[in-house]
Length: 427
Image (cartoon, rainbow, N blue to C red; front, top):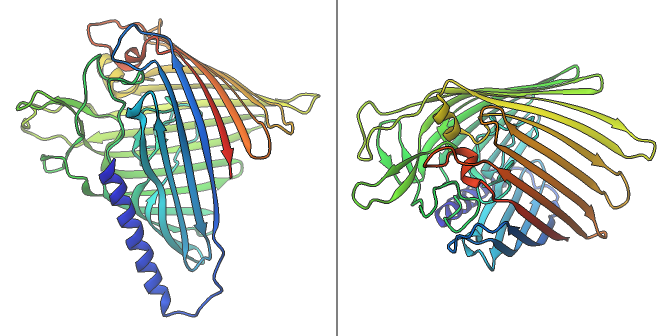
C-alpha cells in the first residue's frame, strides 16, 4: 500500500498548491476555520476454529480515522486517513488515505482534485454500480472498506441535475487478505503476489499509472432518484488469477473494462424500490500474454431491492428488507468467480429503537438460489455508551460447502463463522 499512499498524498499536495496559486491573485477572503474530528476503535474478532495452524482464528487491534476539513467555496480542503494495527493478525495492519483533496466552487460549477471516495449505490448489500474505489477485502464482506481514488472530479448542477466528469491518473492495488486471514478467497496455502494490470494495448504491467475516465448524470424526479454512469477504467473487483512462468507465483491480474450502469430509487407509498445495474465490457488481448491466454466474459449484473418500514407505539421503527442479485452473460463456474453473490437473495429486518442511546438491531440472511446449500447469516447490534463512546457487536455464519476440488465464490469462506466486538471513542 505504500505506493498507493504516496501517490494519493502527492496528488493531493499538488492539487492544493495549484488551487492556492490560482486563487492568490483574487480578492482576499476571511480565513475559514478548520474543522477536525476522529475516532479510535478497539476491535476484536474470533472465528470458529478451522484446525489449520497457518491461519489466525483471532484478531485484536486498534483502528483510527482522522479527518480535517476547511470549506470556504473559493478553496475547499479535506483530508481523511484510516489506519489499523492488529496484534494477533499483523497482515491486517495498514494505513491508507481515504480523502485528501482540494477544491473550488462557483455557482453551479465545482472542481475537486486529489484522492476521493465515491459512493454510487442504492442497495443494502449488493452493489454492482459502485466500482470506482479499490477496496480492502479484509473487512466487511457486504461492503468492503474503500481506499481513496486519486482523481480530478468536475461537477455541474443546473436546475436539479447533477453532471459529473472524472479523470483518474492512477490505479491503486486492492488490498487482498493474506493466507493467514480467514477471509482470504485464495485456496488454502496460496499467497497472491503483487497486483498486475493489463493495459488496453495488451501489455501486462505492475505500474500504478494509467489514465482512466468516467461520467455520471443524476436527477431527482417526484419521489425517484435516477443516476446513469459510464466508466472506462481498470477493474478492481474481478481479477483473473495468473501464474508467473518464471517463478510459479500466483498474481491477481486486473483487466481494462468499460461499464455502463445506473441506480434507481423510488418511494411508492410505504415501500422503497431500489434498482442497481451494470453491464461490463472487457478489453482482452488478441494474442496470449506471457501469463498465457486471458479470458473473461462480458456480462451484466442486476440488483433489485424493496424496503418497507413501519412505526411502533413505543416510538421505535422497523424496516423489512428484501434484495436479489443476478449475474447474466457468463457460465456457471465463471459467475462464481465474478461475484460471491451471483444468484442470491437477501431478506432482512432492521429495528431502530429511536432512544437516547441510538440502539439498532439488524439481522440478514443471504441465500444462494443456484447453490441451494449456500447461505450467509448476519446479526449485529449497535448503540452509544455515552456522548463519546459507542459499541457494536456482530455475528456471522457462512455455510458454503465446496462442490469441487477448488472452492469458488463464497465456498472459499465456508465455516469462517465470526464473532466481532468494536468499542469506539469519538473525538
